[in-house]
Every structure is written in C-alpha cells, then in structure tokens.
Length: 134
Image 1 (spheres, one colour):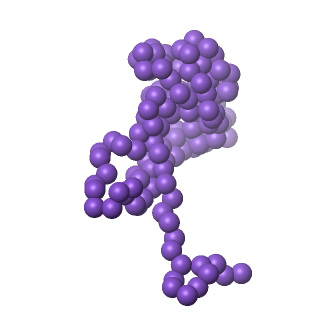
Image 2: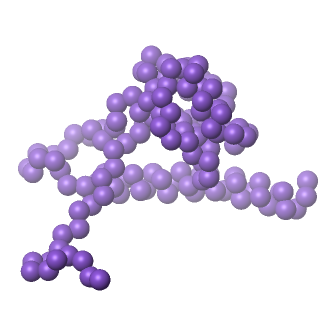
Image 3: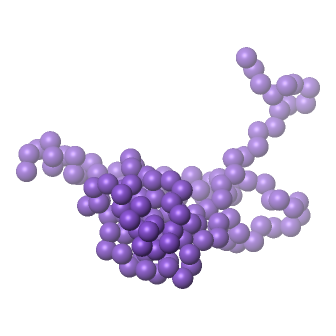
C-alpha cells in the first residue's frame, strides 16, 4: 500500500468518528439552546425526534452513497430526503417503522440514528436598535 493511500485511509478512519461527534454536539447544543414552545412547561425528553425520519450511516466500503440510498429506498419503501457524501457516507430518509429493523440489518449499514428537529437560537436585538449592522 502506498504511503499516500495509507495516510488517506488513516484520515478517513479518524474523520468519521470526529464528524459524528461534531454532529452529535451540534444537535445537542441546538436542541438544548432552543426555547421551550410553551413558557413554564418543560420540554418532554425525546420530543425533538421526527417520527419515522432517520439518518442512515453506511459503511466506508460503500463506494456510491447515492446509489446505495436509492437501492435501499426501493427495497425498504423509504423516501430519501438527503444523501451524505463528504464527512460521512449515508442518507436521511423517511422509513416505515415496520421496515426499520430490516434497514438496520442490511450489511452495508453501519448504524441508524433518529433524525432530530433542530432550531437555531433566536438572537434578540438590543432595545432601540434594528439588530443588524451594515
């Protein structure tokens, strides 16, 4: 194995876990920083999950995440909403709950994670200002 290929392989093996940790931190920060929809009423744990929506992370050995996503969508009756090709190989999809265990058992699937609703924190302007500087 050439040193360039070996170093790229090591980079990929380090990049995936780091990207997943960063993605998890982003989701955690976004969901915990968002205001409660009803003041005084705490948000229920797990209420940020989107029903039947999942992020499917594929194994690194999958060469084309787009074609793998399309093939799995046909096989499991899923509707792919986004394909990930850079930091991770995978896709976001609406998957029928009765087919979820079959998707998880697919040999090309590394893991399946529930899709979460993320809200960006609202930035409030100081009283008397327009809130933007140009």
